[in-house]
Image (cartoon, rainbow, N blue to C red; front, side, top):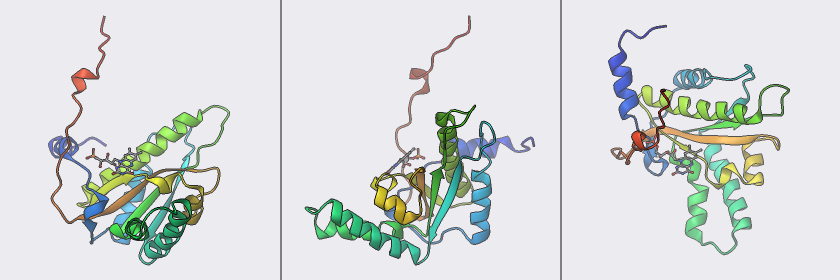
Length: 194
Ligand SMILES: Cc1cc2nc3c(=O)[nH]c(=O)nc-3n(C[C@H](O)[C@H](O)[C@H](O)COP(=O)(O)O)c2cc1C
């Protein structure tokens, strides 16, 4: 498919920016919109057509239930931390209506390196962010300790051989978004043309 209106897509890509999960609220995507986000997220380059990723959607009351479990894990791992931090962890998934966990299921394969399979899961995360933003929502790709702690991973339903590529917080920002300084690509570019 060729674009009829390149300018609006390019303007969107040129200016899009992430929100902060710290200041995100309702509304989040409807089930139909979430389905659209997932289908767009899954439409990424994928060497070998392995689909080496899967999704876990955390919404509704599950956010508080899993948050409670995360707080218990946090308290066990960080006995010196205070009540304030514990309260933050307990509520961390309540910051947005929808948390999309992108799980990399990359595994050793005869032809496709694990690295390439993991890169594809990064593309899934970015496409999910773009799709959410294109639908008018705000989004932030996070990892945080929950993406690495074995007990937190088990609580979210991530298996031992899998990795979390990202927790995509999706909702509506309660503050206007501020951009951050962007890299000067001319400093990052090596041209080879002769
Ligand atoms: C793999 C990965 C993990 C990230 N984890 C976090 C995180 O835990 N907390 C955070 O504030 N930002 C995290 N970020 C950064 C934000 O997603 C994002 O880059 C930042 O908010 C600015 O995004 P923008 O360039 O889309 O505007 C992470 C980014 C990536 C690629």
